[in-house]
Length: 314
Length: 266
Ligand SMILES: Nc1ncnc2c1ncn2[C@@H]1O[C@H](COP(=O)(O)OP(=O)(O)O)[C@@H](O)[C@H]1O
Ligand SMILES: [Mg+2]
Image 1 (cartoon, rainbow over the protein chains, first blue to last red):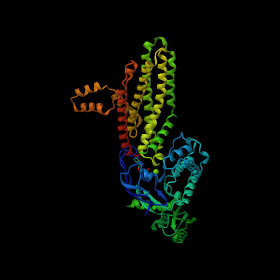
Image 2: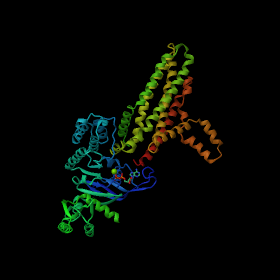
Image 3: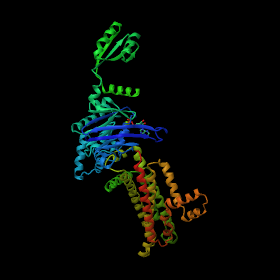
Image 4: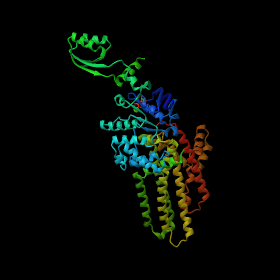
């Protein structure tokens, strides 16, 4: 099997004085990651889960405490591995005194691309990220969204077989987010292998076909997107009911369904569709007013919270 | 290490530094120096020439070293801090390419500046030599100035290499103090150091003397100002020996810097 990314028991302990005030941080705990060529892999986890640490290890920007990492079979961080991967960092700054086109040319010059082809490559790439009109603009003149699109441009400039994007859309306004996502969808259509991290579940659902969930440096689950969504049998509905008495709430508790207080006397609960009728009957019997019933699909977010709950029980 | 990559990183480093304002201030100051050539009275040259040479060469050292500190102290820490290093190091570039590129780019900037100011100084001194003096004498006066500037350039290289060595691991105020301390201790005359070494009875003192003697660069080798000022003969063999010493020192420091930088978490 050809893996675009493979890690073997990757461990990173930060011992630095800076962020942790002396206490070592176990940022990665025996992380095993396998991303196949052709996958769009979403690497999901809350802030501080260890996504950036994983990615920096893959790029050779930090040195793992132990374990191994490979990019297309080459040791991570080696010049050979870096030939094969484009990277967009979570926080990215570029030389502000450079022009967009010139800076791309500079980055391009480290690959074995003949000078004659560079110009057309740069124009092509800028067109893809919709920055063609900015080719002569200074980097310092770009907006944040444009900067992020430039970030994609510098990552794909040499058409590497693998793209690693760290927090692609964080810090962007909704329009800029959509622009950036559209570019990724374009790349997906071209068959590009992409590994990207995000702390937002909703963002990845419509882009990825593989998902890995990381929490506190531990990979909780790595599987195709469907596997997460089909986890729970059937669909759910959200019901909102009013004038609820304590006995009603107790009945929900009995059936292990969480209720959420909206305001005094008004509660909501998410129940499986197969039990929906029973609950409504019960609420009627208790003289509660059912004000809302909405179908609710089991989302990646639900899967995520469930996985975290399970992992914390252990 | 890929030499082409080193040159590209050097050239972007150069490009970045010529946008810095302090460069223009330095060059402006040196222009004032040149203009002051016209203020000297050409009939009193006998006494004036050494004074002018002394002032100019002292000024040149000051410019060169200030520029070296200003360029090198922030070069690498800024890129680590602002993360402009990430997009660059994710290209097929090794950390060695980066480190040597940064060093060479900044040294190129130091070179250009020293060249400009040295040319101004030789022009000035040349003007002060009475016009009836023959060419051979004229050259004997002017050539040592160039040598002196050349050794200053090597000296700046040693200082720059030391700053590069420390800069991934220290904030620049700390780096400044440390490098300055090394510079000052490296200026202690060898005669004194031998004396200190002989006098030490404690092992700590002896160790300190050894550090002073063998590990710190000996900046004395690069200083030929006295000979130049008083028009003594400057031996080209001495000049090339000092330059070679400096070059070897720079190479060793950068190799160590390279090894240490490989391990750094960015
Ligand atoms: N340089 C560092 N020094 C110390 N701790 C760090 C450093 N970088 C990250 N950490 C810690 O490691 C953990 C993982 O961080 P990170 O990989 O940035 O998470 P994510 O990208 O998923 O938000 C966090 O607890 C963070 O505080
Ligand atoms: Mg992160």
